[in-house]
Image (cartoon, rainbow, N blue to C red; front, side):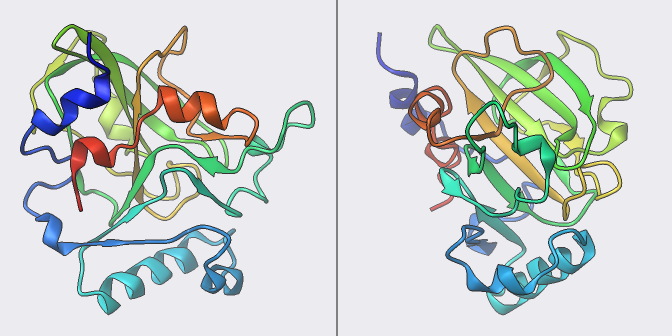
Length: 225
């Protein structure tokens, strides 16, 4: 049986957020430690970072900023969620972030059913989160949608079917999404194990080989560029 990633090139018209915005209006965003601009921001103030995102979009004449897969970040340094003394520091992002205003529609990338959902509370966490289960050519895998609005999970039920392109949720603001500027964390997961409504989106260097294999680059599916 072919690897899951080998099936992605045959999947067409995949979008995960506001399908009225074409990929020509997306722009990359570097949030790694190499971006000197970030050192000038107080990352504890989501509004300041939101202004930075808005300026980046305006400068690049874009509506959505995206990126972050396999990106080593300093954004998590002030968040105890990512600094467990018993393990290596978790600071490598293993999903894709799509930065746009709160309330933006989030779409199911493929036909799927709700595997789990939860409000993952706490600074730096996902906030409201939905995980869909998919079956493509006998490959079972999952997609995670994090930093959603509270309304997105209020009346949701396990097993609910969503079709490709159907609105799944809306983006939340900093009051519910873990204290971040509004954005979607989108992640592909091959083997979800016993996780339900949650799955690590940031890992340590020690664990990176496992997560790069288990969580393929979302752009292989989205094909933004």
